[in-house]
Length: 356
Image (tube, rainbow, N blue to C red):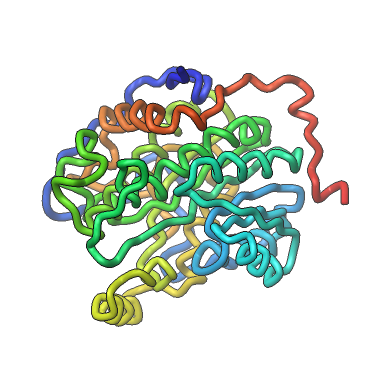
């Protein structure tokens, strides 16, 4: 039985940030102790990475075929990184990689199929390279308010959280041997605006008691944010970091499942108040690459700034993050690997793109 220590090779103490009760209204301010960014909501992914040389770095981007996932892959490759881009369809991942200038490798990953997650991780490990950036970007958003289950657990929670949970576990040792491995989780503002008022529904992960697509999506995004913060705590004392982010309001393929009327209203709102795809990928690329954030971990970013969300939601709820870790381990036990302290030879893994 894998426990929290074996998952990460570290003790799982409670998060230092106290839990916050859910209530109305959102007050947001810059997080203390984190360097202020010169970028904002208008910045693009190319702008936030301008001047960076990522040659020799390996990045993994889940959900690479469109939207901010594709733009993230494109810009990281443009700056010299070798990017593994994943998709449920290997053919679509291959097509996306062909559109990118730079070094890319396509991989098949179905986050709703844990065997697929394990195979994808194993395929990435064959590259024999440290992983510098693991960007958990792929996501699912239903649109018909019809509850769907995968092995008794609500579909959004499985795909958006549990699939990435397994992937992080199985790739963690390669992040460990990087000079500075970063796990970047694309969460959402819905994590504190649309999630259930009582937070993670540990006693009803199938959401039989209360369900809507927006509630289920917010529930899964809250899980993303909580796991990112818990992971940061467990990574203390290593060279690895973990941060979550809200990319902004963007029209992406996530909206493809919405009913026609809702999608029309959503697209109209995005045109009025949203971001372009290039702007939407900026915060992801900034958190994944900025030299100023080398030791920053456990933060939540919006518009390229680390922010503190006051008086709303549960994204800083340490007790809930602890329980989520335990529950996630129980649900994915058969697909997890025990963290092994790397051996000396692991630090000599070759950089694939430097040996081509």
